[in-house]
Image (tube, rainbow, N blue to C red; front, side, top):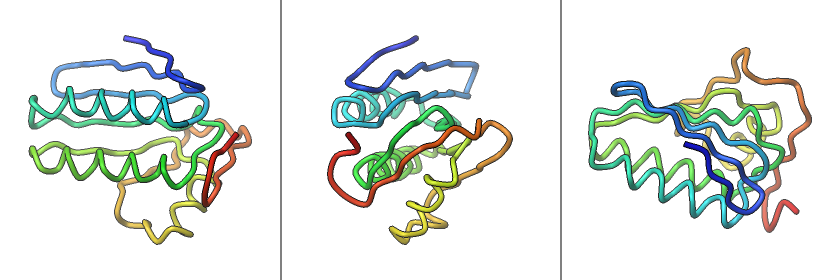
Amino acid sequence: MQVEAGHLRMSVTHSGCDVVIVLDGELDTRGRLRFRQEIHELLGRGGTAVTVDVAGLRAIDIAGMAALLRAELLLRGVHSSLQVRGASPAFMALLRSTGLTGRLQVDAGPRWSGATASATTGGSTR
């Protein structure tokens, strides 16, 4: 399934108990709301391993990081897990500057394309 919300394109792939959510563009207000809606749809499944691929994100701010953290907390509450993959250096820097290192399971890994991503510590990314 693919959806567009604001400046975010999101594709969701289900394979057994695994779900991969690929985020491309900017995790803006409309995108965060749609991402939250997708997470809420997964909550009833329990035992689901959710991977959020952020390699295609051009921008993320504190509110976007909070959406990922909230998703992880909600999924953990139903014995599911969330892993973030493809994190850019800017994503990792925002994670460190907000003190969230270790709160999310994050892998920069080979999926990071090297494209420039911006991470802001407040307000809109646009």
